[in-house]
Length: 300
Ligand SMILES: [Fe+2]
Ligand SMILES: [Fe+2]
Image 1 (tube, protein in one colour):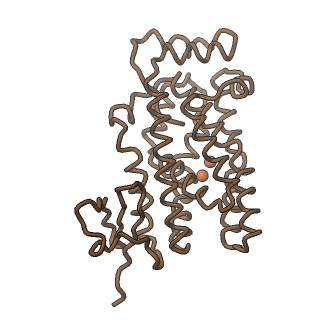
Image 2 (cartoon, helix red, strand yellow; image 1 turned 90 degrees about the vertical axis):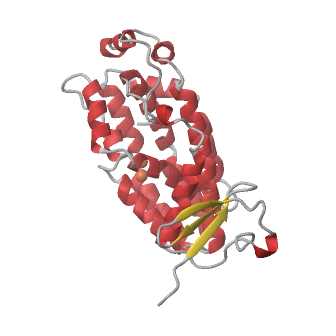
Image 3 (cartoon, helix red, strand yellow; image 1 turned 45 degrees about the vertical axis):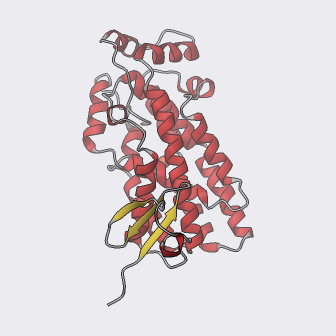
């Protein structure tokens, strides 16, 4: 019987993620282990397998989000928070095809047709997702174009910058880790999450196009599956870089969530009011008066 695969990646100076093809994942701190007897002290070199690769990727996300409080990670949704999240969703989608094409061109130069094919396919699949967010904002009665051209939520900026930077690197394999992180988190959203947001929207308004397509109801779940299979097929050095970047992206995302989610509804409304420069639709403005609960649901 073939031996099950074990994969490992060092993601911080003292933490490695170890994943077994059977699904077991653990965090390994080498302190106290003599390097000579620590089998995980040197980078892995073997082939990957879907079962262990997904353990590394999801382990990296869990580790990156370990610092965020559960209460903050799953706050009660509010319409104003959802609006800010939609603006963030627009910004994290608008440059995705261009960035992925850019990374694909680099892999073409490097003679890696399989990576080119994967990135080109992803670029095609992600095309037009920014427009879903714009349609949702419009459906809420907002001047969508003005809103997104004048406003990037603070917590989203570092995330957008990270992706831009990754895609122009000499060896841009890390962009796959970034995309995995965002898509995996989106795919965790369930039908009930969509229904909760739908319930906040005015009757007859469909403002959940982006959310539906970036949830377990839409294409995100299959994107995640495809990425796991593709990453598992990569050489060990690439898998290491992808997992390390998944961790870095998760850290940036968690920090961004913390930043956005700690704002009160009134603060978020004021931010929107200033950008829009006119009275906000009644439904949005009125939601500030129902108590002063903090928090918005993370990116739509
Ligand atoms: Fe998307
Ligand atoms: Fe996607």
